[in-house]
Image (cartoon, rainbow, N blue to C red; front, top):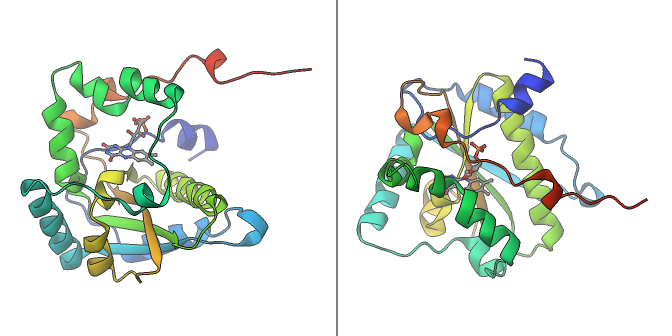
Length: 218
Ligand SMILES: Cc1cc2nc3c(=O)[nH]c(=O)nc-3n(C[C@H](O)[C@H](O)[C@H](O)COP(=O)(O)O)c2cc1C
């Protein structure tokens, strides 16, 4: 694919079809993503992949927690402040992903997709050491973006979702992540189910007007 196709093709997939991804493909993507820049080349990231039976067990355990009404307790929520400034808050309220489903009365599609972890055949969990400066979280974001663009380039769908790290104790258990690492984010990878309503481009939320985020001074 050319760069324009990859960049413009980077929208999330909330339902994957049943086709499996070879582990080798995922390993190649993560290996290439290691080229990402990081503060002083610190490369604070680690990637843990769950697939096959281990992934099914993890999905079941997480869904049980959702059914029991156990509150999400992401590692990053305890590591970083959860106070949102007005600008991102109002963006989430007016053009966040859940809003585009809400206004079409289809919030259930969105909730079900999250609960079933998008029928993903593989999930990559991304961590940084618990003892990390904010820079490392920034670096992890760059690493995540590299993984996603490389995956799109290979014809895969991508789904970054904090809902998959709602219960870090379960992520740690099934993906065998040490206690001293923060489970930051998860990216589901797979092939896009083109017939699923939840993947309809009508649900892609709009971006804020450019002049709201850009200012040049000469
Ligand atoms: C850090 C992060 C966390 C996200 N968490 C979720 C999530 O838990 N559930 C979900 O359905 N989408 C989640 N998303 C996807 C965003 O809602 C989506 O990227 C955004 O609405 C823009 O849509 P688009 O990527 O299709 O253009 C997340 C994206 C990022 C980058």
